[in-house]
Length: 415
Ligand SMILES: Cc1ncc(COP(=O)(O)O)c(C=O)c1O
Image 1 (cartoon, rainbow, N blue to C red):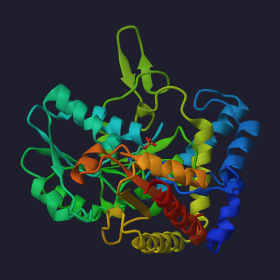
Image 2 (cartoon, helix red, strand yellow):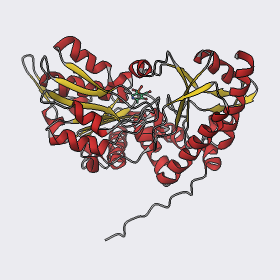
Image 3 (spheres, rainbow, N blue to C red):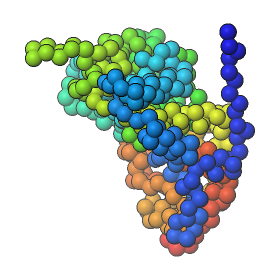
Image 4 (spheres, protein in one colour):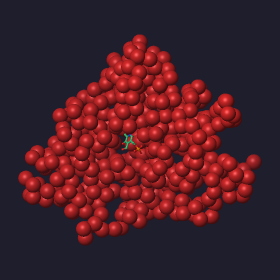
């Protein structure tokens, strides 16, 4: 028997890791790029770009349908990517992983195929005010079309989300809890395990939107005992156009298809159609094949470091930035929950978030401004918009210094 292979991890050093990301070497408006819009989409390391290029130039063909050499190779790589995602989430089997075109589609799949056929008028879905629209609008569809009632869990004034607050809203008509693992605006991390425990005690399944969570936290779907977990590749240093849904096998097996087309059937006649087993049942048409190779390479890249070391670094950056903005009495941070992830959102007195972000941009500092697809949260905090700096593994304290300097300059110009 062969001895198990131990993969040597790289020592994590952000200043070394950032050299893996070619785009970080460029300038904007003659200034070095300071990329702090990672919550929207992260940059890609060379390992991901090269994995996709090598695959596309040497092994590419359509998957699952060909008998020829390249089709078999491509299918192998596509299914190997599914296995990489399985391990990343610690799911039991790779057929519990459905590839989608992103986190949004993964959540829509659950809404359409799991919730829609089961829910009736008056049934309730519990979600929080800090959800991204991706985890709101699919449930609004059920409200509009089927009379489902949405019940909203509030966050505290510092942006924390308590498991008790979720528990308090679960009642006899609750059919699903849909909650973000980590807020894309506040950085708040939900106590998912406690939420799952209390929902399951009442027989209610839980879906987590892990689009931010999977980037910054180690996810173990079996330890969480979660029913569904959705995430997206492009925030995880992978390509756009692909995400994944983990689903408990008993749910996936009981779910009807979402999209119809090739590859998701067992048999089609003029009168009848029967469907393939999961995950193929939910992957109609040609899937994101090259992107699956990119996603696997992104996971391998992240796993090449100790994830705790990345997390500690990102927390240091957040604390450093939080401290840095204290000097600005005109700036109000939105979201200060204990243990939050590396996202800093703020409002600035007398300055529109877009004007502020435009000035930061001229200094080379890329941040996001607006409602961040989280309008109910903006309403909760009485803010029309915020400016958001979100940190990734390749950011460093010099990036934070550049942000602080650019903020001071913006105040001089706009204040
Ligand atoms: C918390 C959260 N959920 C869902 C999404 C949607 O992800 P995607 O656009 O990749 O489908 C985002 C993207 O901003 C997000 O931050």
